[in-house]
Amino acid sequence: QPGGRVTATCEEQANDVLLQVVDNGPGIAPESRVHVFERFYRGTTDAEGTGLGLPIVREVAHSHGGSVELKAVDGHTGLRVIVRLPKWRD
Image 1 (tube, helix red, strand yellow):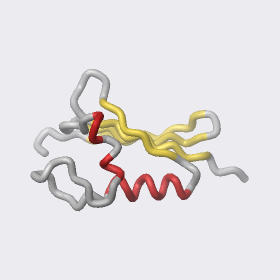
Image 2 (cartoon, helix red, strand yellow):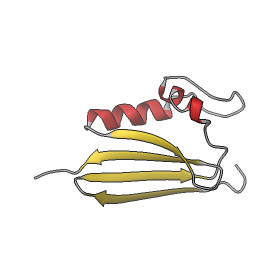
Image 3 (tube, one colour):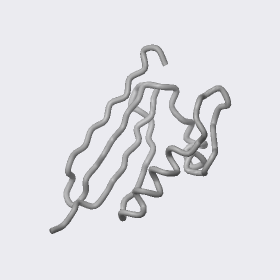
Image 4 (tube, helix red, strand yellow):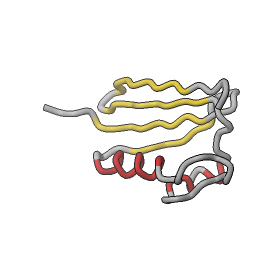
């Protein structure tokens, strides 16, 4: 979208690696957040896409012992996606 911004960060936290993706889009209503992990679910019909992105992200995270969390962006519109994965151990 015009003026859209996406920021991705990656950092270590204790025994995990934390990947965060934050955007300034319309966000996802709290009551809809659980549904976005269902394949083909789309909260709005005017958006492009097939509704597979977040279900794939969650499946990959779970297959590596990780998790995915969705949060509102503090004081702004948008969405924060937090992927937590265990650090690789030698």
